[in-house]
Length: 322
Image (tube, rainbow, N blue to C red; front, top):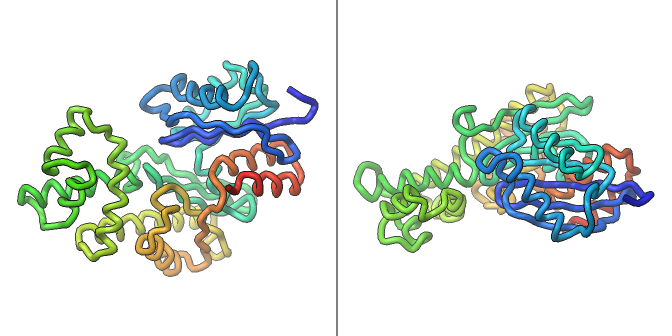
């Protein structure tokens, strides 16, 4: 490590793991990317392996790689999970100091104009976090349906497939989703898609792709697809509203940062429904789509933790805005 203090920022998502080595003055020294960060399914060690793979492509030499690690990760949903991931990174010697948090914190820091507000991530899954001006935090377990979650790309894909199967075999109403699912996967029938998922010939993660034809079908007026998009918008709005209520922010102008592939695609129907829902339920909220990637949020949080000056954060944001 040099005399200039450095931050190793880590953004671990379901589909990819981004790393950035950042100097205290906001200069980006190196960037790298690895595969998906999935500690729940792959285990903590395998998930951190993706971090080291990304580092190997970006940084030469042996650890420690920085003075401080700021890691904001999918799968770090509970304190015990954050502790396990932090302990594994410390064990590997990535840096002498390691802070681990959920990736929604990085989204919030990347998209908000300050260090507080609400963030709702709707990517492969769905989650939200709120931070008040005084530093109080509102979080959700975000463990899927068992903790009340609905939607996200994979959830929407499952719903689209469910309705498509039932439309094809006659148990449900007609919907263009049946044809959309067949065409998307190049299958003879929707049932063939389900069987391929059952046997593992088609990875479950590919259900995330069905959000795109689902949104298109809803825009074209398909009633089944439209109902699903309306429910997704409702879930985004209620997460933001509840986070604001818990933090006593409903009466305060508050940025709601929207992130994850489903929302950053800027679908006019879905995002319009989110905007109108927020206007009705949380009229002081202002929806913002982050213009920098989540790795920038992780790096900014790292600079916050080092006590870096604002000009360093501005330099970093500009460097990672592309």
